Length: 307
Image (cartoon, rainbow, N blue to C red; front, side, top):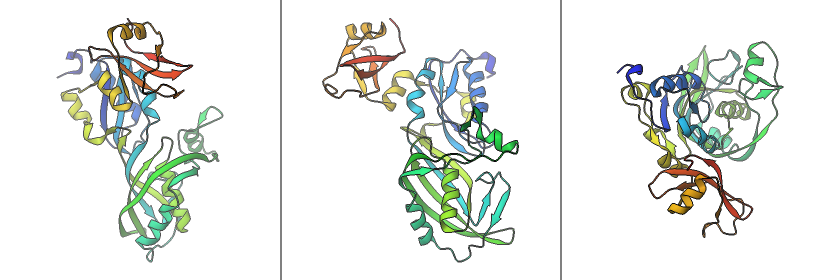
């Protein structure tokens, strides 16, 4: 089917298994053509070399993306110990090598354990962090030296899955397969760099696959080729119910929320000031709004289905 032959897509989330070599912006452009709408966004950039879960919102679902961006992420990755690069990944020039022929798995596991929990991490200099209004990676690629400040992140899991010795430019290296589950804003490239530094041998990322963004895991995704055959859109209510708790409204409540009016606190949240967000679902199963508890009321933060 040609893209121009399609009917415009319904509002909802499109869960993409991003291919290597594509930017997240490239994927959004492709979904725009498939969905026949400009109103498409994504929840959390993946580097071009990375593959895996990219959550895209179509139509009104772009307003849900703010509640997905901050979700924990899960990755599988391969870290090469014994070589450092300017970008902390395989796309950058090697800046130092160190023979690691005697490096064993138990030492790597011990070093990785030190990077779990609440830590302060310096993002990679080629990250999208802005410095004086300009992306850090743009400054680095124009020849500038960039020093970014450390920021708090949480690494829930940094598990060594397998190790394999190899040769790289006549130097012994160790390729380490890992699984990382972490807070939003954590850079796996920086974990690779810091793991290598802690072991005194240098390290960089050679492969990265995002397997989950919050409740949206890779088993729910489709490739761009599959989506070109059939654009599968996760409906608004179903997507919101996966991402947050649900409050079932009666007809009168659905009308009130559609007008942007606040509701009394639900029994489950009474007394828990500031709780939320909560998906407000109408009796017909449609998503009306996202509620947050504030000032003694459940207030619509985003109205998705106005009355």
